[in-house]
Image (tube, rainbow, N blue to C red):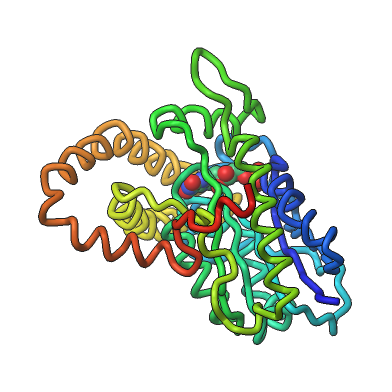
Amino acid sequence: MKNVLVVSYSQSGQLADIVSALTRPLREAGVSVQHEVLCPEPAFPFPWSFFGFFDVFPESVRLDPRPNCPLTLAPDAAFDLVILAWPVWFLSPAQPMTAFLQSDEGRRLLAGRPVVSVVACRNMWLTAFDTLKTLVAEAGGRLVDHVAFTDRASALATFITTPRWMLTGRRNGFFGLPPAGVDARQVAGAARFGEALAEALGRDEEQDGQPMLAGLCAVKVVPHLVLSERAGQRAFRFWSGLVRRCGRAGQWRRLPALVLFVLYLVTMIVTVVPLNLVVQRLAAPFLARRVAVLTRRYEQPSGASDARMAIYD
Ligand SMILES: Cc1cc2nc3c(=O)[nH]c(=O)nc-3n(C[C@H](O)[C@H](O)[C@H](O)COP(=O)(O)O)c2cc1C
């Protein structure tokens, strides 16, 4: 019998629903699935206060997370496959996942193991995925698959619906805007990844180091976000350093710097982001090759192909 470890963190329950849809076929196939839910100490609130939300920005970007409670697993537990289910916080893995990957427990559990990454976020996961790959490699894991679930509503709509959800807990559609988050159809569709993993585990394919989830529309990279996200990450590195020089996490001393950051962010969103889209469109012939190379890179390892979708529909 194969043993799979799922390590996840979800505040609203969105990722928890995805994990449950994905793991059901594994359990039904007789695979032993152990689910470890990360528990930061103290817990991050949900919904967030305005200050609390932005106060996690510097430490998320600088990979200096709040620690987690000890895991409930036996210290010598060994698994055939590890599934990491994580949200994105400020273009970086959410702090609880970073803390897990940096911890001794995380390193011990991942060392030499094949790892499947499952992200669910608004729509910007590319640079966070770069970071996650590095953290997994540093922990000694082998990343074999990556699946991304995103909010399919327009960027304009989600600029409003995602912060509203995070700051009030309300996810419903309002004023003609769609509900926030990953839609129910996509969540239910996570089952195809569980079915494919169950079949692959049955053939010991997790040991090959090759992706097991190819051909299942595992990711969809939006080309115009590739360069914007990378520019955003560079700006976030600057601002996170500045805020951290003003005070530690939770200290009111850094409120003025955080307010400046929020003003910068809003200005960027209403001016530079739309301008950037126009510039990218005009410069498309010159940027096309670089964007294509980066798009292919972010689609790895599982890819955007739908070649096997019919089997699992
Ligand atoms: C502090 C914070 C920062 C976030 N930053 C991003 C981001 O940079 N990119 C993105 O696509 N989603 C971002 N999100 C949305 C999350 O990735 C995720 O979709 C949402 O928090 C729901 O996840 P849950 O399963 O933990 O409830 C952020 C959420 C929070 C709370």
